[in-house]
Image (cartoon, rainbow, N blue to C red):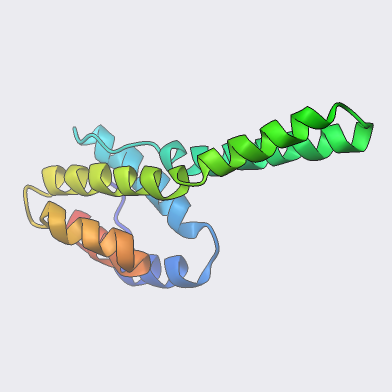
Length: 133
């Protein structure tokens, strides 16, 4: 696994948009190479991409003057996908925290990892990187 500075992981995660997602992707791949079972970041992005796609469909339909029922369906699907914006990241955090615990041989327990990921993500990047180094 590539050695990274925990401090740079903390600062970049706190101040650079989308770095945390990049860090999760790269670190997840490294964890999987070490025999862990880290989830793909698509688990986090899937609901957001679904909502963006459905809204785009509704806007495109409106722009071309298509049937009005399509807009109503797009709104309903987007509203139904909203809870997934919370559920999928929780599932991701649980799976990623378990993978970190597994790869670090328990140096960082699952519960601590989950709380850090869910509530203070830049600090999670710092602590996880420190334990993985």
